[in-house]
Image (cartoon, rainbow, N blue to C red; front, side, top):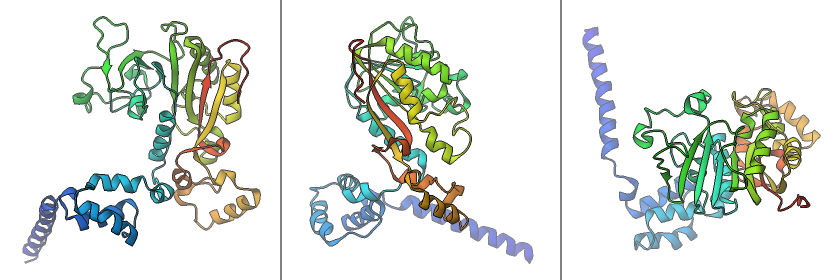
Length: 357
């Protein structure tokens, strides 16, 4: 009797599970929902609330008349002031990625670009193109370590992405080279350390980008990299880079935030290093503002007491909030209190150039 009861219970559970799957697959896609239902769902998902009377009167008739598509409705809501002011990126990583994309999209137009450490783990176009650089170029060269020489965190899974990557892109200068063709222009690869740029001729590059890469070489090797970057840039050419702000990451934890990091700079350290290398700093901004890092001593003491009550989620230190930094996406003038440092530098036209920053 007990055995029969167990069989019946297991069978009932399986039937309910399969029934749920059948109902899921029979559900219509969002674009096939009735307009009023899709309209309400768009507001619920994007803005986290019910449609307001003004939005309903303005947008719903356009949706019903096909003047506005379902996709256009979502994009309209995503571009609204309300969404931009209220959106919270729960994962810090995705928020930082969005801020870095904003930074890349703000960079100067350039025809010959060198990206140091710019391999994209999931797309052979490379990180610079995938993150939204807006301008077409004559040539983009990515310098990165061979796949097997990288830290395990940054190795491409050739089997997993075999259909997308195929064979590893050929190195620039290799016989029978076939660059990766992107919508913006051709992308070439060179597989070696960015400390050695001897294979690149003097004054042949308009823009060098170092996205989350200078922290992966030692403090002394970074001087060598910057010296080489200055050499390969044309007079008036640009160096753009972003990197973790050591002043804030030390609030997050005592050790480096990445096991492959060799040094995490403060704004004072890196700006001095850039100037000593001979660069003119055009702009220096922070990405993802750390509101708690900017508080005064009274507030810090209150936060220290509050930490004991458990109000800081995720085990954060009293003066560091992962969710708070994630919610402040974008570029900020308060660079010392931001999670990432971001610079646009220029190679002077002549030796008498004056620093503008």
